[in-house]
Image (cartoon, rainbow, N blue to C red; front, top):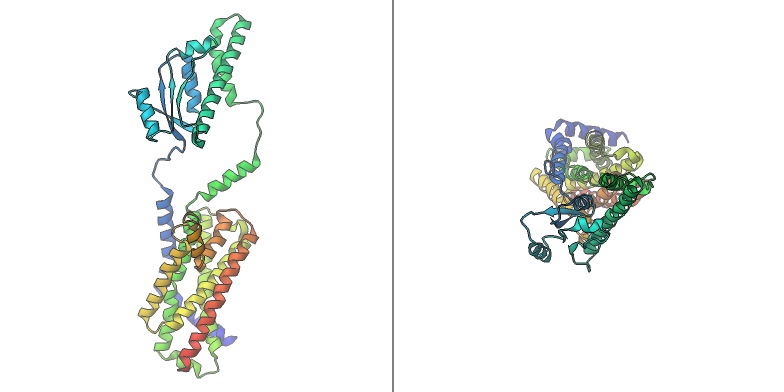
Length: 400
């Protein structure tokens, strides 16, 4: 065990003295996390209104038509798009061309007809055969019914009080009371879902673990160069003449890479927790498990690269190529959820995809400890595979 620890300590000293180690393991992940996060979050852009655009013309101008306009403007389904110069024919064309989801025309005399109890029907241009069309139509009719009920109540108040002047204020007060009902039903499940979806909307919940994993692989070039230098300086050959076995040499190098990766993950997790407000520590044990298995997996890959590379140029190439391929395939740049089921399945050939699943289950999806067990098992499987390949290649190369 002493031989293993000696090699581990020696490698850690060499790696921490190298400026490239801090560049790839700490500085670059932070820079690219912020860069990608701000780029994809649309910082500086005005928020877009997600409601459906509905053309609108008010040819009446009376008080009740204004009250109806206010109700329509408060819709959560659609937003009114007013164009004073537009004609009903223009609105029909825009709806037909799908520039507008629908159109509403309040005809002249609407307020007077509503007061008489026989309101003139609104002109609604909409394709009621579509789901969006039915939803818009239903929301418009709900606003009209609310206005008519307010008119009836105001008429009753006016008749009872014997003062016709209170009618207008009674209509306004009735409509206002709809916004502040005396009894409310609080749906805690819905509130929890909304809070969770708001957390999921954070682009940093993807870019933080994505860049952390990408540059963990990129940083392997410094670890691989340690093994290359060791062979070029004949230090490895001299080491093999001592009582130190091949297994101890491999484990010593492996532990050094894993410890460095684990330190990187912990520092970047704290950065995400404290500065990016990502709740990695909501399930601290699960986060630690994913970080540990990711370090074991990537560390074994680094060991394999170090054994395969015969020169520093090869070490760089063998480190950067897997970084680009595994990161792109595994969804470090673009979430696999938006690429479709086929590419999602193919992407999970990369261990990066499994590591991202584990981290995002915690910080984005709000899942528990059990949700990281399968990703952790997959990462551990890759670690065993890479280590076995590295041991086999190391034995063959040293036997020659």
